Image 1 (spheres, rainbow, N blue to C red):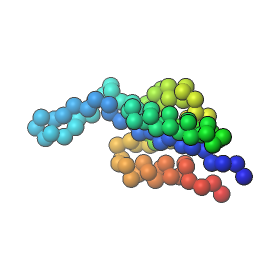
Image 2: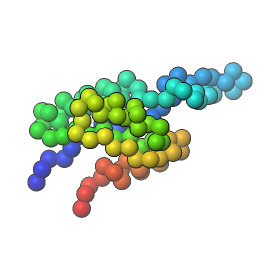
Image 3: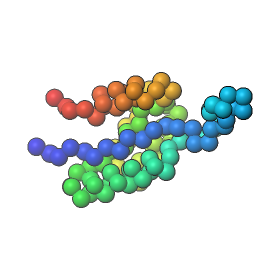
Image 4: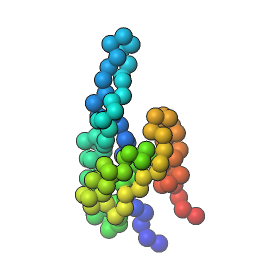
Length: 108
């Protein structure tokens, strides 16, 4: 039995949202979406753990097709695979968690 992959789950986010002065709520920007430094750090940890355990690292994102380019940039840092599960990133973290669990859950 081979050891399981180490997955780094990254989140497609607005890196520089504006703030609506009337409501004090964030306003999404049309051009500043990507992965945060925390996501990049998570991938680095996954790569180190995978190397130490003799297995592969995988980077996974549940997000829109627009995330492909940035995901490819993350993939260039060394994971065995980069997986984009097309998903409405604005539907909430609970829904994203269910989508990711479906991809990363136990294989029968």
